[in-house]
Length: 543
Image (cartoon, rainbow, N blue to C red; front, side, top):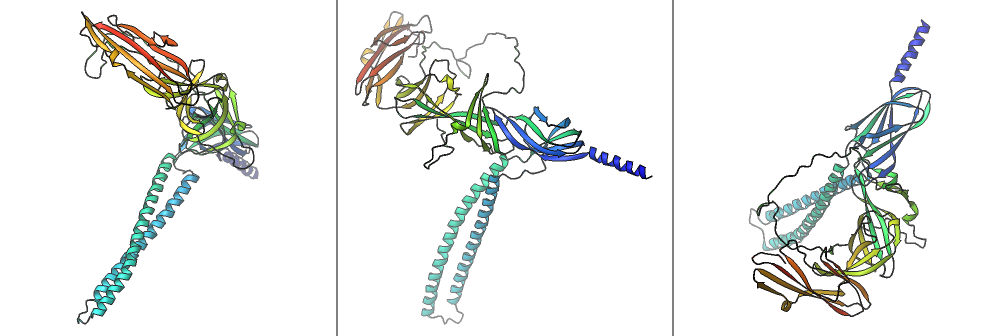
């Protein structure tokens, strides 16, 4: 009987051990952030006796790509995994939301106190008014003139003080109400972004022998990303360009990333892994219509010019500064650029906190000194603005990524531009700023413009004069571009009558004249272009 009881105890203990549950909370250790998406790595430490367990791991992102989920641990056998969302257990409030909640409660209480004080002052004023009227309306009619004057003086002195207090109360209430409303709106916005659910991972685990182990959980989520950007600093036009690379990082994974090892990558993970499939390509006729939203076909003269309207970006925020006598600490010392076969990784040695509210965090990366040459550039047909252009050479070795940039020139912010290292040109050009000191004016010379009708043809002659003046105290290099029309129809004939002075380049395939000139300080130059267009009489050509 005693042996049977012992065996039953052992069997019950084994059954209980078989169905034991172990709850763990995962800690986010590292994040590799891609341009779209991120790979997160969590760790959850556990001490397990021999037996079988259902291990429940909390603290994961609720939005993950299940196909990317990977779990490993030494000394245990993981036989099954199940991922789900916990909609019941509320997450611990983030520090920001807690501060907002505390502030809201403080101002709501202050607002209530101000309204109570206003009500007291209103009641006192009412009591004063009623008492004064009662004193001046005695039933026996014995109120003297002196009593009336005394009551009026008392009312005047007391009422003025109460009215002043009521006015101050109203102003205070208005300000407190505005502040309360702003905090409430911000709190609601942040709470909406702070998803009230978390990811839960259930594992079926067998443990051959007692072990202290660490569960490593990795997965991909689309709710994160980063954008490259730059600060471009130019001290003078005879020195290199200082290009400070930065990253705008944001995430709304449902987690606050605290003290996380961060890697930024320009890789593009392929979630679908589906190669494109070609389908049959059928051709058919279609009509042109003069009205509606359909295409309208017309015989017009077209030309191409280089886009001169590119503007220059601003997002430069210094993450940290050292204002004492110690040497400045640069992020360059903590960022390692790892060139892979097809992508670039920025490994950051400094741990980062990235809140899960979706707001961009600006992170400094590397600073590069890039050789550059400078010139002025103008396309007066498009705009008479003159642009300062920097041409960067040997930029490929810095592994730059496309991104917006701020431009600071001679300690002055001058605008925004775009860095495009993927261009096919040998050198990369940046539009930095406009400079009114290099003045350009383009005007039509009416005495050399005319329209003639001869037989069945019409000939239109156009002549333009471009005047350039360098109002600077130093010589400048200038690239000036002027388009001329090209024939898009056999019945349209274009003839160039005059180009003065001769253009440095003439590209007849695009119809663009280019002059590369160097102008001394105070110098004025003129450029003249004249062309004729002949076409059948009665037709319309837009010039």
